[in-house]
Length: 473
Image (cartoon, rainbow, N blue to C red):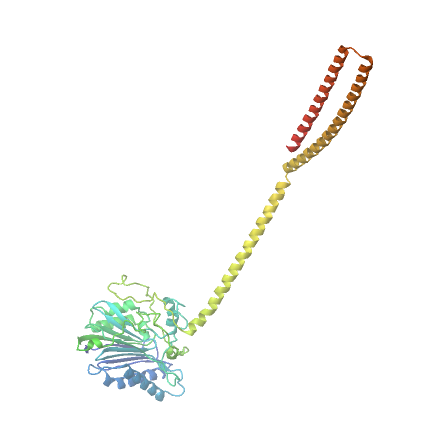
């Protein structure tokens, strides 16, 4: 693959700082941009050393006659570390620099970055953004972990902290994120910039500026006007592709632009496992105004989708908050999980106590209702009436039993009197031989007495039956 480029548009401004810590260098097919940190005579030394070392090492390895490999690129970065170690004074423990690199070669383009300086791949013909490097900053890691929102990154008190930087004397040298781009077309634009360029510009404004049909000089003036009030040093490359000539075997070139974990437009939480060995915290000297780094502050940025911005086919996925597989994130969430568990247990215990209290209240209320019901005057009257009725029935039964006993004794006496009388009459009849009429008369009298006795007995039994019936009722 042979790639021909237009002359790059370069922006290199001091901003409101006392000294310039940004440094850049380029050849026909290599572009290097560094943003130094550490204060006066420290940040600018680091950025200059890394820029010069990488340009000198990689210049023979780029262009359409050679295919740049990752091993060659990593070796060049190690050489830059060594040059930084040799040049840096002993007192410069906190000095360092970010890195953005773009190299065109036979296999397409290779991009690499360390820190929060960015690289973009823009396709103006489709008004789309194909690649955006992922910042190595604390606020961006917090955003990806879901701890803060996108808008909070620009106002976070620790926005000046980056998680990767090239520093001298480091025990473990951090590695660069590398992506390979083989899908390059005529008219494509590559944009390299320090974080100062993005203080007051969001990705959509950047896309509109780079996709406009303005001339190179007019575009440069538009960028200068948009960044006129920026406080930090700001530097940028605008590299446009003039012509692309494909060759046999280009289909075998590596193209991981869409799937690279360092592409902020295509963040995959399953593939994006943070390597602890690659992370180093570089805290800049915030006491010196000239050394304060400003995280990109897209104040006008809103979570827009592709339909809200005309022609943007690849929306910036700031809606997503992918999980970061790091022990630090897990430890920070552990107290929150414990607090949530304790709160849940307390809530359940409170519910159980309230339920028991309600049950006790219902029982007490039921007991009061029952006592009130049974202690009512009507119930007392009915109970007293029932008691009196039972007493009367028992008294009647006793009296009836006495009547029955008396009746039986009377009957026995009557029968004895009758028997005695009959015996006496029989004797009289035998002795006196009384006439027949008298005998018949006495018989009638006896029959009447027998009838009276039967009637008395029947009456007694009727009274007894009536008494039993009333008792049963």
